[in-house]
Image (cartoon, rainbow, N blue to C red):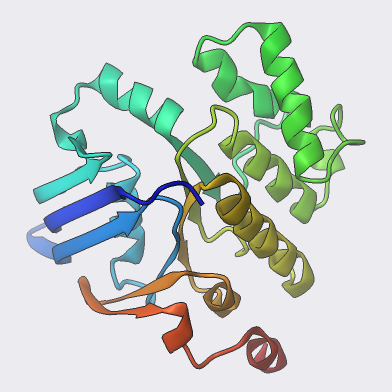
Length: 245
């Protein structure tokens, strides 16, 4: 793991959505610090605010009040170009629905963020091949998403998230559309990335199998942090969870 420092920090983050004549306060003052290289799971029931917090950290939405810092940069102060640069270079995204471009091959999907980042085609192709090999898809370079299983598509998404060597990977329900066994493989793959490459992994998830690999679990209830637990404080283990599912 790389030398620890605070890579994500939020101070009194609040988010209010307006729905007709009503206002819904999704986040009610979130203070949080995440260290570089940590594997963090944000967990909570549907409607708790965990996905909203996830979007704040990823710069996909802005808080109604409060601040979000990435490497001590207040991302609310960035203009559209600066924010796009930060998201492209600092943050990799993995989505529940994979979000692969259907007309592109696995390799082309992985190369896309590098192309947007200004890398030339030869270097982007070389790195794309390396990343697909890393996630176990060395024989699937030229397959399009419809020719891949759900687990293989998510592996492509993991490779794509690493394209520009980000310091943070945000994974939104990365196992949500996968079966139990395949989901466990993706969780293990993310754990390896965190431990071997020092990448900070932040997941928003309902998947209790994440608990066994997380350094800390942040429990969100009704727009607030209910508790933060270290791995050694958790009393649920993967074997027990698998037996329940």
